[in-house]
View 1 (spheres, one colour):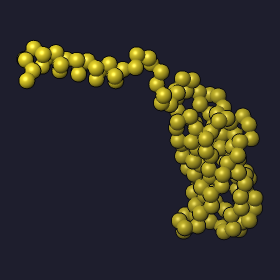
View 2: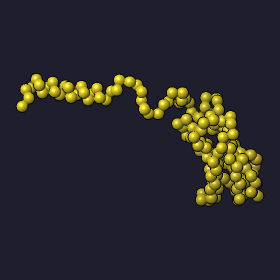
View 3: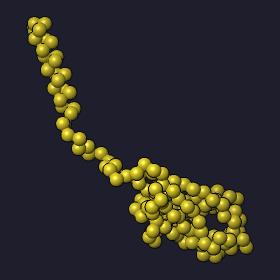
View 4: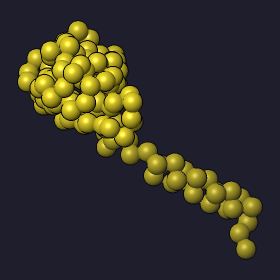
Length: 139
């Protein structure tokens, strides 16, 4: 059986060892490197051409992605989701491709006249933005 003083010394050594083991003594964290990353929000401007579309006409969807006034050319993902508001199951998804200067584009055609909700899903620099706009397709 341990004497009371030896017991306290042993407890102290265990605690000191545990605390020393939890601290590596360096600040080299192996997690995500956030140096050079701005926490300023990304901004996404959603547009398409032509502005007034007709059935089966090719439409170019465009997302301009910026952060701090400068272009974001390293977006991880840019998708355009086009949903017919008359039937949520009528949906078109297009992958945006970088064309430089922070611009991402995709082309598609809509087979039915009506109102659509266009959402651009942009993931860039640990952030996600989903601006939504309405598009009317005429006959």
